[in-house]
Amino acid sequence: MKSGIRFHTCRSLPRALTHLLIMVLPLLAITLAGCNLLRFPGMAPVPTPASSLPMPTPTLAPALMTPIPTYTPSPTALPSAATPTPTFGLPPPLPTCSSTPQWGLGEVWNNEGVRTRLRCTVDEQMGVQGEEVYLERGHMLWRPDAGLIYVLFEADKPGGWGAFTDTFVPTDADSDPQIVAPTPQAGAQVYTQPTGRFGKLWRGSPLLRERLGWAMSPSTQRSASPVLRFTGAVQDFDGGTLFWNGTTCFVLRTDDMSWIMY
Image 1 (cartoon, rainbow, N blue to C red):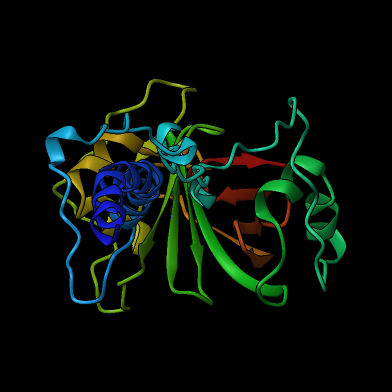
Image 2: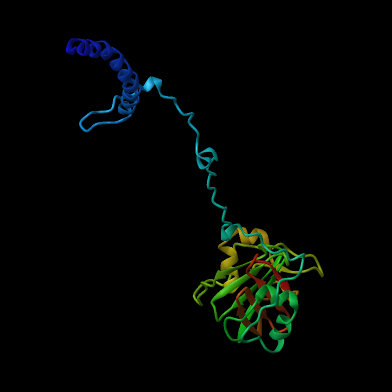
């Protein structure tokens, strides 16, 4: 009896194991699948080959895609390159002077053309005892206060006058007898060589002799001196000189070395 029972148990054992495996195997599969996702301490992750990874497409930042503008400094105009304000033919402004010439010289200076060119005074008006001589093509004036001889050629022409230092002393010869002026015809103008300080300057410069010509004598006598003495006045300005010989005022301009008479 006991044998039968043991035999029955042995026969039913495989069937029980089969049912057990059927129930355990799914659980074991689920467990193993979850273990693959776990990383245990001390186990390094298996690197993924670089060739198998997707490569992102490079993109430039918007700031790098926009070209940086080149800095160009603004040109600065030089003071010397400034365009002058057009005057449209207007006359230059009249000078504003702290002092003005008086009397006859003041009347001449008050002419707009004279005042504009001579501008302001640089010293006081001075009376002089001067000398002068008239020549064929010019005029010579002695200014004793400055020790100068003014030589005047064509009026109102640039370079029409010059100033020369007076080097005459009383011991100098008055004239040169070897220089003989042409013989005048009856009733015609008498020509002679200038004498004194004017003669010394005239004889010492062939250029002046050629340009001025002979002195004109105020008399019909060839022996008469062509030099005339006068009492006049003189005054200097920023742009020239006013020289009055008692009858005529000579305006000597230094901007272009021209002169006129009033």
